[in-house]
Length: 343
Ligand SMILES: C[S@@+](CC[C@H](N)C(=O)[O-])C[C@H]1O[C@@H](n2cnc3c(N)ncnc32)[C@H](O)[C@@H]1O
Image (cartoon, rainbow, N blue to C red; front, side):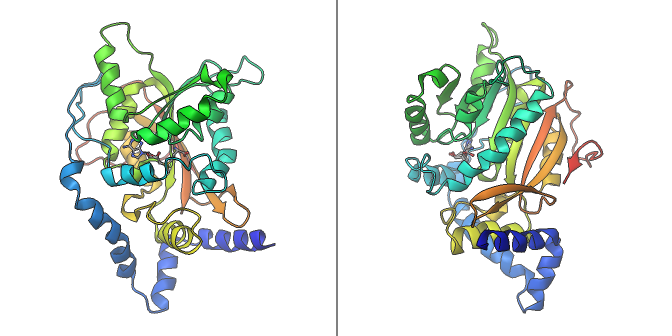
C-alpha cells in the first residue's frame, strides 16, 4: 500500500519535466540558485584536493592515435568507497539499492548481448562473452554476469573492495573459473594492454559495464577514450547512472541520502551527474553509437526498481563501438540522435 502510493507519487513527479519542477519550487518562494549553491558544497571539498587529483597519466593505448593524459580517479571518492568496503554483500545495508538493481540491469545487459552473441549453452547464455566490469566494487554485478556464463574481469581502484569481492567469490569455486578481479583503474588496464600488445596480445573485451560508476569519476573523457581502447569494434558499452536534473538532486540526494538514508550521506555529488544527451555526445565523439537509453526508478518502500518512461532520474544506456576511429570534433559537434531510442 505504502509502496504503491510512493510509486504513484514518484511516477507523477517523473512525468513532469525538470523545468516544471523548478517552476514549482520557485512558486513557493525558493529560487533556482538555491539548488546550485547546495550542490556546489561537496564539489568545493573535492576541489581542495585538486593537486592530488591531477596525477597525470600519459600513454598511448592499443591501436590508438590519441594519448590519455588524465586520470579518472577522484581521491575523495576512493576514500569514501574504502570506508564502505566491508559492506558490499549486506543485502539490507548501504548497498541494498545496488543489490536490487540486478533485477533490471542483468537482463538488460544479457538481452542486448544476446542480440549479437547467439546463445549455445542452455543456462549459460553469455558463455564465451568477455566482459569488463569497471568500478565493480564488491562484485555485486560481476558475479551474476559470471553465473550466466560470461568471462568477467572486475576492476576497481579500491583495493579493499576488490578484497571483499575476492573473498566472496572464493565461496563459489565453479564461478571462480569465469570471474576474476584486479585492483586498478581503467586507464591502468588500458596501458597494460597496450604494453603487452607487442607480445601475445590481450584479447579485447566484447562488452564493458560501468554501472553507477561514471558519476564518481574525475574525468569522463579519459573514461570514454579508455573504453574505446579496450573494447572490440562492435563491442557493447553498458552504463547506468543518474541524470543531471533538479529532480535528480531532490530524489537522489535530498530524499535518498538525507531524508530516507537509503544511500549513505555524501555518496553523490550532483555536479558530477550527467544527462543522457551529454553522455551520448561524449561517447559519440569517442567512437561509440548509442543504441538505447532507458529510464528506471527505485521505490524505497518496496525496495524494487522498475523501468519507466522517463530518464529524468536514473537511466541505463547501451552503446556500441563503431569500427572506425571517430573524426575529432573540436566543438564536440551535435550528435545524431536518430539512431538511439530514448524512453
Ligand atoms: C556506486 S559503486 C558501484 C559498484 C558496482 N558497479 C555496482 O553497481 O555494484 C561505484 C564504484 O565505482 C568505483 N570507482 C570510483 N572511482 C573509480 C575510478 N576512477 N575507476 C573505476 N572505478 C571507480 C568505486 O570504488 C565504487 O566501487
